[in-house]
Image (cartoon, rainbow, N blue to C red; front, top):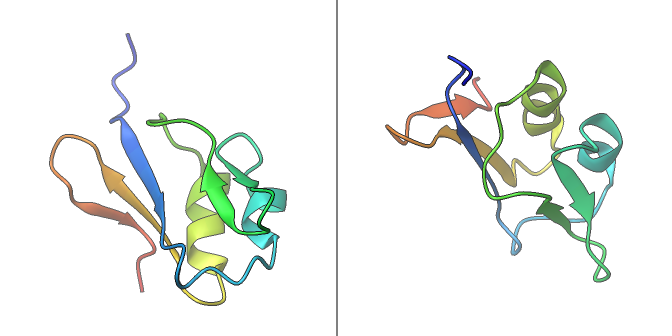
Length: 78
C-alpha cells in the first residue's frame, strides 16, 4: 500500500469550457466526455505532477484536486 494520499478529482461542469488542456496534460486522470467537457477517469487517484498541472492550468478553474481523507485542497494552489 502506498503512503501517498488518495486524491479526489472534481470538475465543475458548469464552469468547464472543454478546452482539452487537462485531458492532454493528465490523460490517466481526466478525459473529455462526449459533451466535450472534462470528467475524472476514476473516483480516486494517487495523484501525479501531471494532475496537479492540469488543475492549475485550467483556464476557467473548473478542476479541483482534494485529499480524500481531509478534504484539503491540493490543487489548484494560487
